[in-house]
Length: 403
Image 1 (cartoon, rainbow, N blue to C red):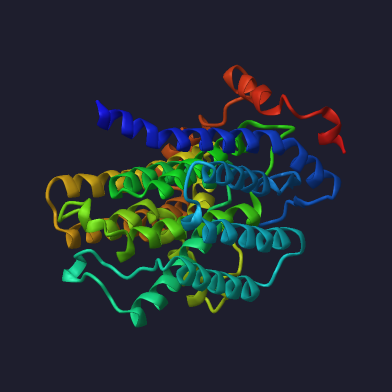
Image 2: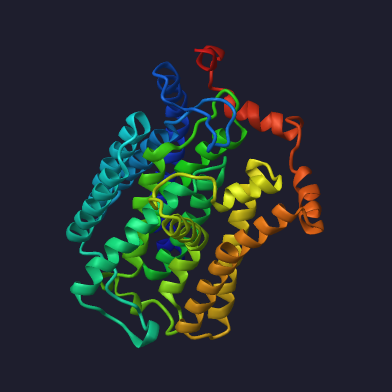
């Protein structure tokens, strides 16, 4: 009984902080929207983008306001020292993203800022990817390898999260699911500070997801301020899990592959980003040059609507995670778990994309069948959708959308 009470007690601050973050995101949303509309900080339609009208692009500010409010609340319950560098990093990258949303920074400037921020995090937290936990028989690795590896992995994660923000509900929906999974793993590893961070971030994203998917007057995009901040947060999750500093050996079974787990959670965003960037390089273009070759563009081309596209890709990523979990539970070695996750990532991106493009180009029977299914996802805004739209828009005055 005492153990149960103790477990409940350690979750109370987390639950309160998560609720505060959710409330603060909901409360600040209409004010941020008004600023975005008044100052014309909007994402305008063009040949590459999927929306038909300009959409306010400061949703990430509302989300991060909720995250920071939740973290400050959590600090009232105990030691905040371990999360302070994360707190500072989120603010810095949010400002960089906000500037990019307003005046469009050069990719080189953003790239340099990301590297410096990862170095700052690794130095101040002493967390970096320095333990493979038995993968290929490797455990701790030297700083000469771990520091470059940490920078490479985290910059990749940041850009992967940034590039999935292409259809309504995808980046926020994926991030909510991922925060849940990382939170579960951190609880298993005994790191309650990171459980709190995962819960706070996930809770902050829920109001934004509702506005982004169902809102009409309240609709906003998360913008670079949001995606870059989420990228930093997920980088923190990954380097914390794969750091020797957390002494994960005390909590995990010998065949629980932490690297396969983190790669499974990040699988589709990372694999799709690798596919897109490698294709650009092979064509002699900059890996950062924008185009319409991401996985979410493919499903839109197949005829699916935004929310269906987001749900399909999140489902594919969830299947990868379930397959990793099944392999772990069946006693597969850590090496086999990794190969399985990599194979599924390649299948779902490098193979699926060109295969589907061939079907579209040749107008095959398979494409026609998929197109018929996809058309059924284009539902009229009535019934439950109208109810959810009213819930999303209830705080927003007509004059905001007409400004």
